[in-house]
Image (cartoon, rainbow, N blue to C red; front, side):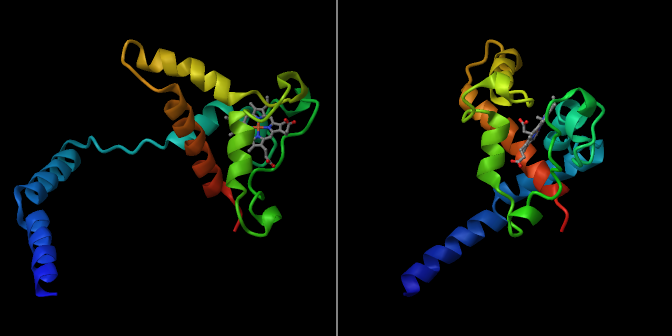
Length: 152
Ligand code: HEC
């Protein structure tokens, strides 16, 4: 027992007292001092740019394009409320990504997975990348933002 304790203690000391911790602290300080830690809200930025035209900037389903659509966009702020208080994450992911939709033309909502796959190439250029990871992170940022839009 004492052996395990000693090892655990050693690890703790190594992390807090070592150059590691100091380096990290410096990095954080440098960031604040130069003001370079401006937080980018990926989900909000994407939502405002590509979703608000139909879903409305607050997700209420009242964007400026609504009159041109065959189907009205649903209110995205009551998704959890309408699902026993739980955000239907998988359904949202699949709807946004669009992989489970057999026919693109039958939906008023564009297929974002396809759009992001194309953008991955533009984003990474010559740099080796995995398009699946890129698409996932973009869709998940949106799901996370929609979670923040929920009425509680
Ligand atoms: C051209 C208009 C339009 C745009 C742009 C659009 N949507 Fe939609 N969205 C709709 C419509 C209409 C529906 C209702 C289902 C359908 O008809 O396809 C919908 C449905 C949804 C749903 C399904 C909600 C549920 O109950 O499962 C989600 C989630 C969603 N949109 C998120 C987004 C996100 C995120 C974006 C931006 C990346 C976006 N939408 C962009 C029109 C749009």
